[in-house]
Image (cartoon, rainbow over all chains, first blue to last red; front, top):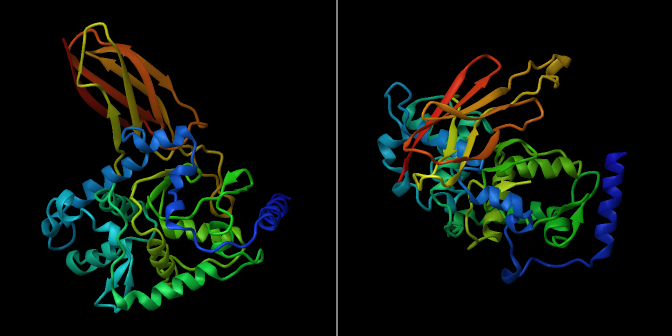
Length: 258
Length: 107
């Protein structure tokens, strides 16, 4: 019943508006602009933002020696406040060794395998999210700055193609909602513009921190499509496209969302 | 993973001033009403008590129940009476205790 209702609501939303193009730069808004005053206040205060608990955990992991060589992240990178400032704003980036794009969580895992000789963290594990949030937090307030790397171009194009392609039983693309109907509502919740400004972020619905990949997979399940696996090149391509689309917008990591 | 706590206590206050104290701790607050794989019940695991002492005197305490969300956040007020240590203590179902302290200077 519930999904039938949702489908009907979607239909109403979609019929109401003519197909629009990409969102003009002047009209771009972060997801926080669509939230209630209370949720915004929760995000703004570091002692009430639950994402900061993970940042704290990430800070401990950053400094904890691990592996055979007993090296911590800090052994090579030093103080994260200096070395990681602005890093998260430029991910996903191109990885020379695998000759493919890599996102921030993937980079942390690669570092962990190569320099600490440890098993990678499971995607979406609390530890990986904590470290990603800690590194992301160092770039809070900085504009998203996608790397200007021609080798990323085909992946950017793939990301856009995935964003625009209708999929799933509901036959909707990302663009159907987030480009064409972002001022509308879906099942009572505002439809946002899907700018990845605060990942990994604390979603009150999840009662936990989650990555951009989790969010995208959620949406794919929502339109009843088969979601890409965590860490899949397609998901990273979508991340690349979303970052390009949100270039210049300020990072809020760790954000709070309803 | 160890539980992490974030507390907010003003560093300084005037004697007699009403001050706001805020405390948040990382905890999954498993209700005990959910089922895992194969319908197996996930046992309850929540923080059931939070107390706050100010120079050894209890100024606030709360019982927490399964309906409280993960990473419980509590905010309350007290009167600044003297310089000293403010201690927050959380106790969970397993009896594990988490403590966070902060100092306040009252002039």
